[in-house]
Image (cartoon, rainbow, N blue to C red; front, side):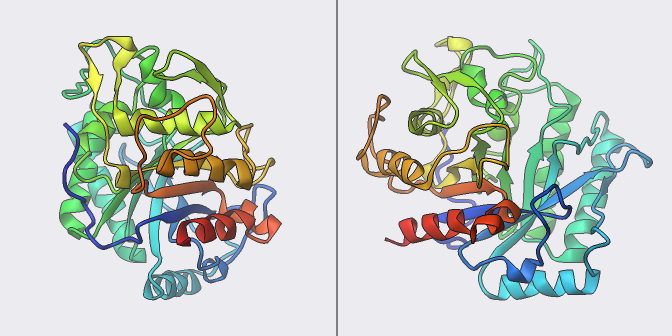
Length: 334
């Protein structure tokens, strides 16, 4: 069933720009949190990872030696005082955390909770790109794979610890979500049990519309990353629901529009394909929110409450005078 009430009433602007701030230099340079422009409504600090030298389920966040910890904590508080949400993102391309038992789950709840409490993060972003695979036994409503069962339970426990204002967002890759339309199994659709299991806690789902190829949509056509139609078709699947593996007896329900956005690279260098110009991105937003400027794929209805847009990354956006954040923030403010 579609969740009916917002898990974060009044916490966020109607539309948001989300960005990943990374705690390492991958060619994009590093910046202080305090220097992130105000157009970013949610900052996802990247990344907390599994500590491979400790007990399973141990989450670790190591601030790069380029930064001073006291300044970092002060910067978080200053951003929050200005109305910005600052979250910790779990995962990334290299971040593996193993939650294969109740003990590992409890270790995750404790260690991730300690990180959140230490830095005062507003929520958790689930950006796991490893160790997520489903089996034929995994009904998305009743998963059995321990990794999936335990990430759901662990996230619910963190929400219970930190209260109603604690946010939960997700940035899975396309194959983990919309890929479940063509085939449900393995990594294909692997995030769907997590999305469903946390549907009432979920603040925002912004799938990575990059590092992928072409994916089938509900109209039977294939759409390729880096196109306006791809943004519309993939996002509309989450707003209307879709059948797993094309099986009409296995419908995955829609999310509310205020829980949905999509993610794009800030620049052509930021990801392995998927970049879309500001103008084409805003055509996609026009189509989704107003049924204007649509291309091949046209949704059945406008979704004016679509929550917003995400980018990897703030650091890469800094290389172009924050064109991504400033352009899209201006678009939403209109």
